[in-house]
Amino acid sequence: MTNEPHARSSVLDLSRRDFIRLSALGGALAGAGAIACRAPEPAAPGAETTGAGSFELEEWTVAEMQEAMRGGQLTARAMTERYLARIEAVDRQGPTLGAVIETNPDALAIADALDEERRGGRTRGPLHGIPVLIKDNIDSADRMHTTAGSLALAGSIAAKDAFVAGRLRAAGAIILGKANLSEWANFRSTRSTSGWSGVGGLCRNPYALDRNTCGSSSGSGAAVSANLCALAVGTETDGSIVCPSSATGLVGIKPTLGLVSRAGIVPIAHSQDTAGPMARTVTDAAILLQALAGADPRDPATAASEGRIVEYAAVLDADGLKGARIGVAREVFGFHDRVDRLMEAALDDMRRLGAVIVDPVEFAHRDEIDDPEFEVLLYEFKADLNAYLAGLGPEAPARSLTDLIAFNERNRDREMPYFGQEIFLRAQEKGPLTSREYLAALETSKRLAGAEGIDAVMAAHALDAIVAPTGGPAWMTDLVNGDHFGGGASTLAAVAGYPSVTVPAGFVFGLPVGISFFGRAWSEPTLLTIAFAFEQATRHRQAPKLLPAVELGS
Image 1 (spheres, helix red, strand yellow):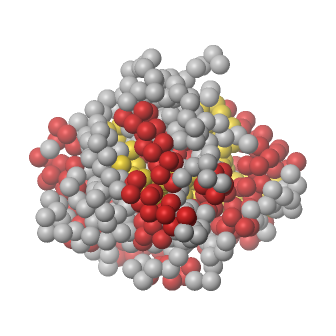
Image 2 (tube, rainbow, N blue to C red; image 1 turned 90 degrees about the vertical axis):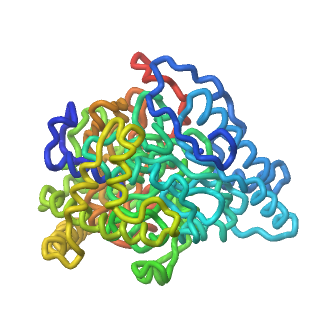
């Protein structure tokens, strides 16, 4: 992703900033539980969308589902059956959204067990019996695979749950399946198309099927937005939760680094990677964040979360903008005039709701972050991915980045039909994490984004949050040239390891656009309160219609 103030017409004229953002956005099919390799070509304009019809659970919140289960109108099994049928009708047939790589063959049995617990008077919390999708780079020790979208891992079954998968199970959530993603979390090629993977094919935007879903958590975003599940878990390195959330009309939370464990997640870079919630409302996202957060001995960074985790849904306040000081990151604006108009309307809404708008606030070093960030990602990708692959069973077809590069070359027709593996090759050239170049880049990027970036600006203006457009309206998917990202606000928070929350802010030609609130480390309660107040006052979320293309005359 890039924060350039103007959109590029092609990936062919990438600047250094474009190259970094497009390459670092990181960080299911017939027969339940079977991985299917989708035909990757986009749907033709005017493609049939039958099967999309009305859906009983459309736009239901977690609270509404729990109320229906408590009242006996629905069971966890009935909801799971409905979502599986919805996946069959919308994801595999009809519009063929391409958001789900694999459904859980044990989902109905899990639902039955949770219904039995409820009948016995036990519920585990607000996620009890709620169907959730997880991104297919998150390990699950069950009969599902963890592939990161790559055919090299098509048969890989994890020996142990990722921490977040285990937390979901403990909370009573039903892991419904694995969501499609940009292969290797979009860190393989400089010419990649977001939402495409060798295993899952192309994920389409549910607002207009010829449009892109942005970022590597594309399937998670498309699935929640199209009501294929109640909630989903995505992962982000730089933009891959917030950008697809913005492009699919969702709330997305990129947490503080260390709030959610990275153990058991296929990595890009440990200094920026995190999992996080993607939901249709701020309340549902807060409920999911509660389940995911926690200290984990397998991830030392999470030790810092001790004493910092609160009941996130309980802090939400419709008056949360009253008296809040919000800084406007004007330098992130300007890449799309219609997006700027939505942002101005959002600022007016915030003023009306009692916020103090500090406009503008400026970041002294924002343009100096990209180069050191990318160096860090290249070094850490090689080291972290090699460590993950080495931990797979002896039957794994790939145990190192070297193996993956060779696999992709051998299977070029299936793995690289549209774009290559330039980033893999560059990462392979890097040395160990003791290298002077890496250590200098890490120190520089963290300092410029954190202490001399977000921290300095917030202290100078006594801010509660900073606001900026999350991204632009979804671009048309282009497998020839790759992504056409215009601009956005993910990088500062991503590099600093600080939290960011995106909320729907309106539409451009029927395509959703999000607004981001970000701030200091561990400021999730403040950001969620502000985001909730904005959401409740504006109510911009609208369910997608699975149109074949944008209706420009509407």
